[in-house]
Length: 82
Image (cartoon, rainbow, N blue to C red; front, side, top):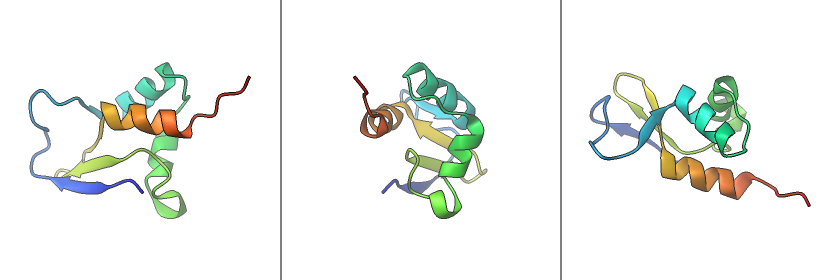
């Protein structure tokens, strides 16, 4: 189950690879897991909560995804068809 955390600042620590939801959708699509901003939003709320990649929400309400979490989620949820 993904985690949701409140971070102290809108900007994560320097050196860590945090990206916005829009950037995360583009990143996942480049990995071969086609995803839109809207789909990521839907996977984070309601009945779908927990089925999307883990994210953090800053005190300002900004949603951020860690690049390593996106890679792992894409690898775990992608089915290879041969």
